[in-house]
Image 1 (tube, rainbow, N blue to C red):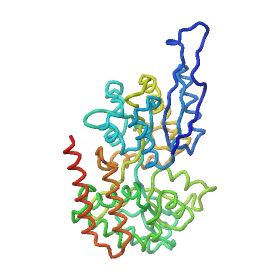
Image 2 (image 1 turned 60 degrees about the vertical axis):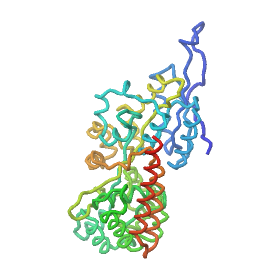
Image 3 (image 1 turned 90 degrees about the vertical axis):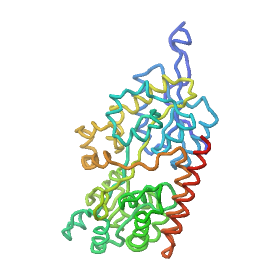
Image 4 (image 1 turned 120 degrees about the vertical axis):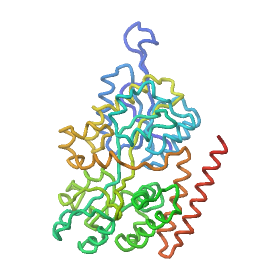
Length: 413
């Protein structure tokens, strides 16, 4: 998909009279981002950047909303060494792939240890590959549980601490459906299933282990078609959110961004009646939330790496993370902002989320993660779609495929 260009400010020009081009030329940066749902927030961010850096003008190239499509567009530009591209946004699982391919500029000598310590550990782990830093976190995400506070209060229930408790409560709350989540065959399915598998003591890289198989069986038998409609197998974020905000489900697994929508009476039939909590655990286990979020990277072949760093440093600094938190509810990757009064006033639920962000679980960190994800997506969807699926057999096949991919990458090194 062709990116749309969003030019803020002037194009390349000379300023002053008689100035030398090398000193007075305004540098134009090209930055690839997703299609903005909040263009006014970006407009304001770039206005502030240009005011602070009058020698730089930024061209935002808007890619598609889909993370997969944006990945493919960005990878094509990077693979072709498109020197017009200077910086870009990366989904949390992309840095190992991009770094291994030599597409990202290492930032160790620019990104100080002191500044790194201000970010959540999981966010920094996501941009680190083989000991080098390849990006700067922009905002973070983790899976959370939304629930109908009014329905639970009417029955005297606290938010469920275990998945079995959620199943029991959902059957008594009176909503049409008990649960909504993201179970279509796409990356969101891996995020949802990581939370079940790891909470049950399993690991995505070893799907055939007994604990991992039992976690998948729990979702197939206790959630799909019972707590959640079978149509949930086609749900991404929007569809799962639509069911919950229309009052059709008692519980929703989603991301922190959904809070702002759910609390807006213009868009939600359950505004004012929603609570937020950690995802449930299994008995004797722990709650697990998938690490999400985005970071900025710099193209190794950028013609303007210093100016690109100035832009990345500004956009990931406390002022801009505070701006996007207040304006559009993006969860900051900087830890200190969870004590900021203005941020908490705009997002009171952030006070509950900091412990979740501190311990969020990343997906497998591998330069071939896209291939691993596709294997897992096929496996999980096949296992969940058929009530009589042979989960053990499907899991063994998926693990053999993952091992084959890992062996191929090892042989190539």
